[in-house]
Length: 280
Figure 1 (cartoon, rainbow, N blue to C red):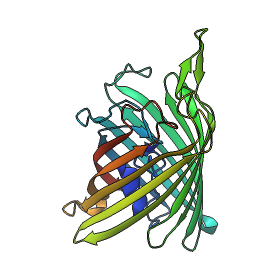
Figure 2 (cartoon, rainbow, N blue to C red; figure 1 turned 180 degrees about the horizontal axis):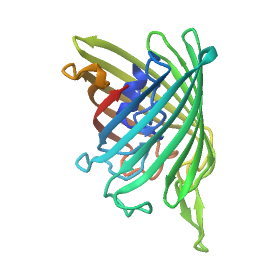
Figure 3 (spheres, rainbow, N blue to C red; figure 1 turned 180 degrees about the vertical axis):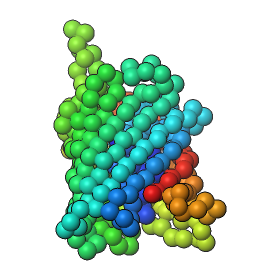
């Protein structure tokens, strides 16, 4: 579940995402409003890029023609004392590489989280297992958010095990993976309703606390910034008995540091997202 920065993650987080912080970067999607003790969100997204914490995973660069399919599903359970438990999964489906999983399924991520809300402040801890490249990248995220104007949030993204994350082969032919470490992602989002359409403008900035995170020769420091424009419109013709359906989409522009994320084909690039959300 990456701070993919799919754009949806940003759109949902804005309220986002998701990614996403970021959309096309993987992160756990925002929990839907707790009208019932048990609820869920299904997202069916098409993305021009797969962005994981600023890293253009499939090296799409300025190309926006080769879409990937990224479905996700999260369940939420309201617990006593303002706690909420979540369980979810995110998939990356495309033909941009040879899949170690099978068919066009390049990656399957799963996560479980626990959140506590006090008035307008929420703290959430999420463990994630990103399964790709014949191994697993283990992640522990801590998210802080405050429900107010601009919806500020901070994600403390901790890579516990690099798995097949960015790296290189040594002179002896041994693969040296990217390092474990921490990335801080601050986010704000301004949004408004224009009739039935919800519009949001999310902004993300990431600081890498660890050298060699996305590549062996990478530095720490400012890693990337992103700004997006997203829109969501409900399918009002669908009976709410079958869930709350909506169509969403948007654009996100990334500015990345060559010193921190050296392997992107473009330092600055535009991404796009289109998808359907079903909340139940």
